[in-house]
Amino acid sequence: MRVNRVLHALVLAGCAAAVARPDRLWSPIRSEIDSVAFDDSLSSLADPFTPSIDDTFSSQIDGKIYSLRGLRREEGEMERGQTLDQVLRRAGLEAREAQAFTQALRAVFDPRRARTGDKYELLVDGRGRLSQFVYRRGPMEIYRADALPEGEGAGWKVERVLVPIEHREVEVAGRISDSLYASFLEAGGDADLVMAFVELFSWDVDFSRETREGDQFRVICDRLFVDGEPVGNGRIFAARYQGVRGTHTALYYRSKSVEGYFDPEGRSIRKSFLRSPLKFTRVSSSFNKARLHPILDIVRPHNGVDYAASAGTPVRSVADGTLIDAGWRGGAGKAVTIRHARGYETSYNHLSRFGSGARAGARVKQGDVIGFVGETGLATGPHLDFRVKKNGVWVDPQKEKYVAGDPIPPREREAYRALLQKWLQRLDSIVSPVQVARKETP
Image (cartoon, rainbow, N blue to C red; front, side, top):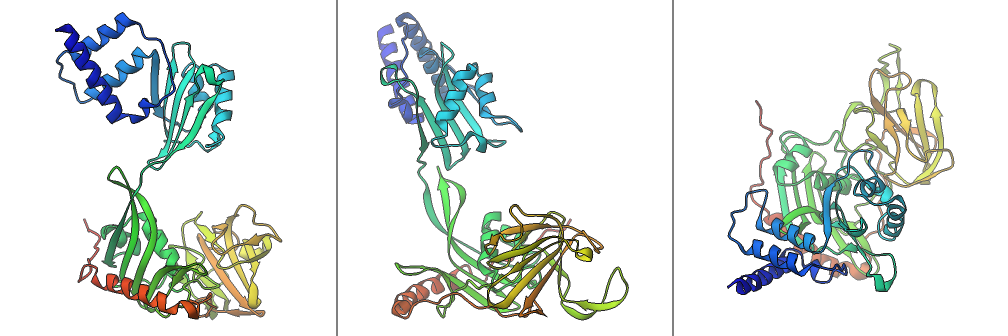
């Protein structure tokens, strides 16, 4: 009878190990197991028990198997200011071994990238040596290291774990009744999708001043799932924004010769200039040749647009160019000036500090952070004074029309039109009427 119970426990333990942690089936870790302890431990596992919420059968199996193999398991989360070396030393590793392991881990993961909240799990053998290490930066970024068997030389097998990711096409639609951000969340989107949507239409829509109650948005995108749980978003396939400046539609198209987002006419969505250097804010003062200065109390031209924003808000370069000046400029405070193609020049004033690498002569790309909102110089509060020159003359950034990117090549128009009809039909068929996203009032 006792033999049957032991065999039953062996089978049950093996199944649980294979289902819960299939990686154990190929783990190279070896250890000698005492036969008496082995028999007693499996007998205790076969006895009836009622696990509590925090002491499940799976966790008991885990603990017994680790114990039988002479391993001690530890897990936790990275704390603020903590290093992987400190985690390993606290687990009992000697300084030399901890240093050797972190050096080996660099082949797949730089320990300096460890951040607060990352999860780790490690196994230490009876001699106090590291046998296995698993590091999780998120559901899709997992790293693992296994100690090599003694016959294969000292060291570790390190790798990034390939996580099975499920892709699903999802549709998000809504009507603005508060802010674009809040409305997106109410309609089933998330913060990442809002930012991607804003980036997509940032060449045509200034979301800081052109969003109105009643504006509509529709998005079809790729959403990523791991073990049935959403973990992020992939590419936007098609999107539409209907607002004060009309209807804007963007479709993703890729071929051997071209890739990007295009409108229904096949024109590139990407322009040479972004509509705004800030993603989410509001215009507090527009371009005006006869504005009453709020501090000097005199009438003088305001050759730019003021964007009210919190101190520290990232400021983006609106186009590719060369940074020609970054420093203190009198009443403009800390300021950056960038020269662009086709005779354009942009200025970003009243910054609190400059972006990394913001120095004269540096090349910048559209969207690069070149500074942060502040209130240096003659300013009544934190804001960005953004200005544009064209051939030496100040122009209104909100009215200037910029050159678009290359359109769909003529030889691919037919293929694009076929894809266009597919996505337009999908956009039109999203829940009608669209959801109304409202902010609850107390």
